[in-house]
Length: 104
Image (cartoon, rainbow, N blue to C red; front, side, top):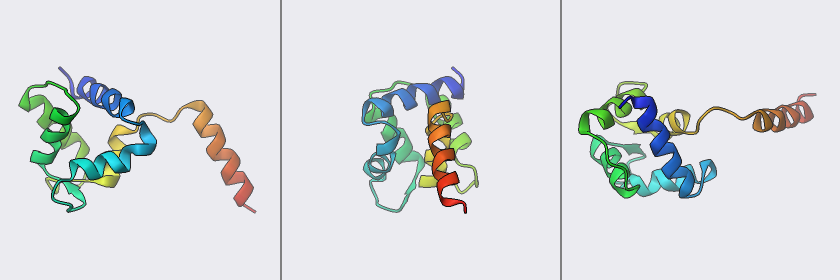
């Protein structure tokens, strides 16, 4: 299974837990040592917590894809940027309207 498919399954599971707006609370739940980073073990725990089954090498592939800075840990920014999904046209429109309202 590709990391894209695994990411979609994780994204769907996280969405069922409260959606993109709750990604911070979900991240904190998975960050069991409160370091502000997800270790490999914590990332694997996220899969178990969401009830997702995947081979360790598939999870590792996604972990490495999320770990943009190569620190062997996933920061909240890396987590949200990897898992929030593409911006919908409606969301892009709302953000543009907000930006135009504050850009004088």
